[in-house]
Image (cartoon, rainbow, N blue to C red):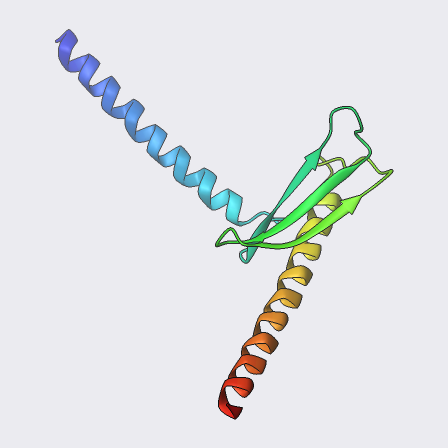
Length: 114
């Protein structure tokens, strides 16, 4: 009887972990500051907390843009800061995609002329 109870308790515990992890994934995708196009990373020196480096990446982990923020402490607990970072990310990604397109067009034209 005790073995059956332990087995049932283990199954219930395992099932609750699966459902909670799915809920976290769903909740993360509904955040206003999470972009579907890419992500950002902030690097801050512990000795100079008002100077930060923000790097923007595509979902394929390609570095798109690097921005240096000086004399301003970035509070990542603030929702507005995260939303602004998302907007900057999407602007950088749009600019990068346009540069990729124009480079492809130039390459196509130059190879057609030769």
